[in-house]
View 1 (tube, rainbow, N blue to C red):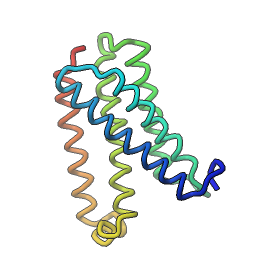
View 2: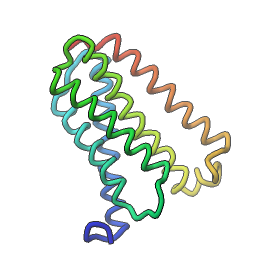
View 3: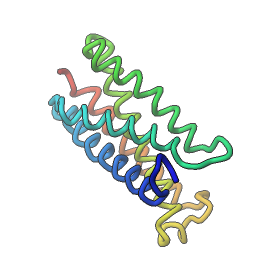
View 4: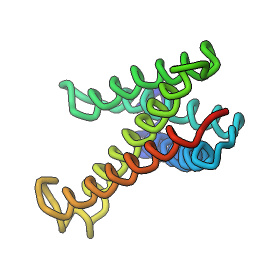
Length: 160
């Protein structure tokens, strides 16, 4: 039992929070590209992404895993995102810091989604059971390039 609930229920909640974080994060990122501030979407994105990283530590484990390292990295990135957005109000260089760290947090969440998809979805797992195979590398490369392109566009276009 995890936090008083079954593992399957906890996993479902964790996945739903993660999907909310990714979905709202994409709205925020495309908003930045359109030079629009979506304050409510941003709050949902940041809260859900923080919750995703935090709840990731609630799964039973006996040793430090790569997912824990990504979770810790995400939380560190999110601290910078929160500071840039709410403490420093995206003034000066903090605007660029906000855009880059928000996009990086979103990328990390999506990176983990791809990893978990290849672990848990039978058709994907059959293509890349050890995650060293070409289909997994292609999927992660596409995700990385997607976020690099969107981040560059957001840095150039988001001025608010």
